[in-house]
Structure formats: structure tokens, C-alpha cells
Image 1 (cartoon, rainbow, N blue to C red):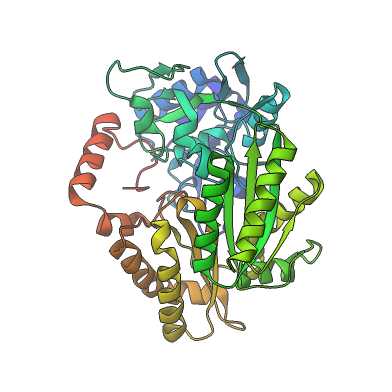
Image 2 (cartoon, rainbow, N blue to C red):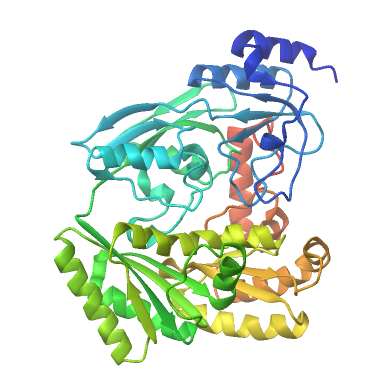
Length: 469
């Protein structure tokens, strides 16, 4: 179909420089994992909510679907076009303004293309905290964070992106603008439309701005690294930390030995202060009473854990630089896996009480079925979210292993996850990677309702078709 009239109309509205056709568009068309590579009719870069609405109206009039994209850091192929060459890739990176900071109301209103790190820094400049924290925070955007209901390292204390958002501005499939940038904590005036769009992966509407929830900045943050001989000990340490620190425990990250071995292999410059252990925990305490109080809690916690045999070794960061170096170890794991090659990724959620048994069972079954496979298990034990990834055996082509073994490995892992009442997607979303798994495993009534919502809000199937559903 000749789409020149649409392209000309888009150029007239956005300007020639913001309608990209031809040339190297791989930064937009290929996902972060380099697993999915599509082809867009054009990449359009609106600079305002009004321009986003105009793009949607023009696309709808020409029957062309739209794939919204933020920082293109997603891990499930939800933000790149298909291979048809018929879809518009709508980049929101130019919608990057901070609209308002209300310190008394503890809210910050920003546009969808704002980088997460920009939001964090803007809050910090006012002495406040926006607690969403991800390894990709220097390149991911708030719109993408909300569209995928991102989790990260602070969910244990502050919740997912959904819990950190009070209001949204959204362009609908009809090209209208939903003005919902409320900073209210209480509003029982009908359906909560905000929660429909958060986590919908761009399939129901295009988020263009958000009002976010801020917190007073803690007076002290302390970070520690501890070694455990088993995952069961890691779970025991979590329980102990919750009892001792209570709400002060803001992060509790888990890393198996293979995870940190990959970091040592690919990022030798990152010092690992503890000897290799089967499991390593990174925990953080945030305190509003001051550093002395926080340090007292942390030292008491670690001394009791050592005395009870829950941990075998520990180190406490003595400065901000040391704390950052400990966090860099955790954040480097996905990058190290990427350097090692494609792998079979599982972003799963389980009851914390089931985590140790699950990992033990899966380790045994996967080793029997795929001798030599390398289990890279890390993640947010505090909220039950594990990144349970299977790397090809040494010397085996990673891409071939993924292509030939993914379906069988997924079946083993997801069957066990579902049997324990867990979820096949904790924080990364569904995209195209897990679309068929969702269709096969989600409650049929839930799927029926989800499809009805999609049909009602996007009757033409304009937004991100064949993603999620």
C-alpha cells in the first residue's frame, strides 16, 4: 500500500527531521537483547502531547498501526516494530520535560520521555527521593517504566512503578487526550483508568506524562554484601533483616556464584570483596534517624546472622563510593550475560517461602536434561522476583542453544513456577517473547476480560498489535 500521503502529512506536522525513513534505524528497530529486529515504515519523533495525538489520528485515518517506544531497554521485544515495514515506530524521547515539582504534595510531574535518572536527580535536587531504581536508569524512560510496570531494586520497600504513580496523561486510540495528571492520594470518583494503562505495554494508549510520588530522602543509606552457603540461608537472612530493620530494609538482592563469575570474567575491573560463595546477598538499609542508628542496626543484624550460621562472611560499605561499587557488581550481571551471548531468560515471581525449593529442584532437573548448562540466578529475593536464566554450556553456540532448547527449557521452568502459584513475568512484561505462554497459562476468564478491554479501548488494533495479547 502506498503510504506516501501519510508520510507527507507526518512531515508537514512534525517537520522533516522528525520523520525518519530509510538509512540505519537499528537503534529503534532492534531490541536491547539484539533478539528482535523489525523494520518500520518510519520512525516518528513528536515533541509534544498534541503532536502525539496528531500522529495517532493520522495513523488511524490511514489504517497504520503504531509501536510506542521509550528508551528501547525492554527485554521482551515489546517496543520494536515487526518485520512487515508497515508500522510506525513512535519514539517518545523528545517528550522529556519536567513539568512541575510540588514539594509540599511530594509529587513530580514529568513527560514520558524523561530518563529515569533525570527524574531521580530532579527529586534529589529538592531533597526528595524517587525510589524506582533499575540498572538501565541512565537510558530507560518513565513512560516505558510505567508501560511495563517496572520493578527494580527498591520494590521491597516502595513497590513497583504502579505504586509510584498518582496520575497519567494518555493519548487514546481515537487521538484524544486523557487528562489525568492528578496528584491526589485519594480519589474514589469512578474506575481507576490509570491502572489500566500502567503495565499495558502500549497496547491500550500512549502514556505522554505522569505525576509521580516522591518521598523524603533518608538521612542515611548503608549497603552490605554477605555470603551464604545455600539459598535457604539467604531466605533466612531476609527474614532476620526484616525483623531487625523492619521498614528500614529497602533492598535485598540475591546473586548465585555463576552470576558473579560472569561479572569477574567480563568486567575484571569490578572488585569483588568477598571470596566466591554459592550465594551472595546485597542488602541496603535506609534510615531517617541518621547513620549511627542505621549502622547499629546493620551491625547487629550481621553479627546475629554470623552467630546463627546464616551467613559465612560479610562486608559493609564505608563510603558512598564503596556502596556504589557493590551495586555495580549486581547491576553488571545482565551486561555480563549479554557479553557471554544469548541465553534463555526467565523473569519469574514466586512466594519467597518457595524460592529455595524451586531453585534446588530446577537446578537438578535442568542439569539432568541439559548437561553443562550454566544457571545464572539473581534478582530481587525480597519481593520474590528471580531472574532465572539458563546459559549455554561452555563451547556451545549460544544462539543455537537458545533457538533449539528454549521451548523445552521454558516448559520445565514455567510448569514448576505455575505449580507453585507463581508468575511467568514479574517485572519485564510479556511483549512478544511470552505472548504464547501467557495465552496458554493465564486464567481464561482473565484473558477474556483483557481482550474485551483491548477491543473497547483500541477497536482498530492500532496500538502495538500482537504484543502482550
